[in-house]
Image (cartoon, rainbow, N blue to C red; front, side, top):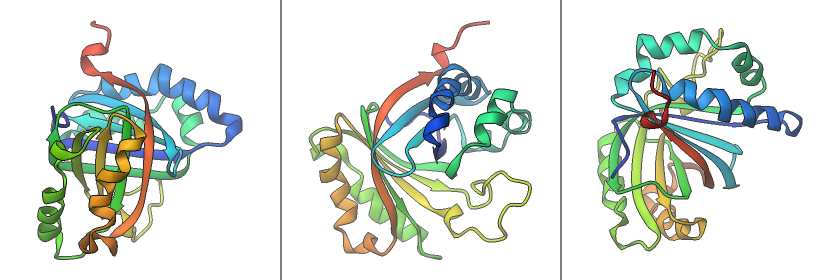
Length: 223
């Protein structure tokens, strides 16, 4: 099936090697479960870079986009555990995208993920969305199980700090996500964007990640 729900939170970061073991322990033993347990969150997936920056990436699917601005989610953001505070303070090169899922085709989740970051031109969003939708079809691409487009909300995607930047041109960026059975399958699918003159000037970055593990709401212990 395509991506669950209609909202997505994407987070990506680097971490110093000295802190990496605790960072992974925290993510795997507390943070992912804590987030998926929030009302309206459906699932989460953790990735590590094959050839990408930042090194770590996580995708959280939500039932609706509004979940990402809900009281339940805001409460989690403003009341982190002590373990969360310690690890959040160590994040480097953080990307935080609060997005709407606008295109999702195919079925299932792959062991590898290709990602392409685009910056839509002002006033050209509708045309760009249509052009991308025409390319995001996995049907004739070997090893590609699904393809998606998520579009950042420029207000909610700003970093969560006491002094956010007045202007963040990247807060309204879009991401193409390519679910693949193996990293070797990603380049042919990504070429539909990389080699298309309509998108070249809009591309900010791209990369390929390995899936570490995923967690669905149904996996959580029942009360």
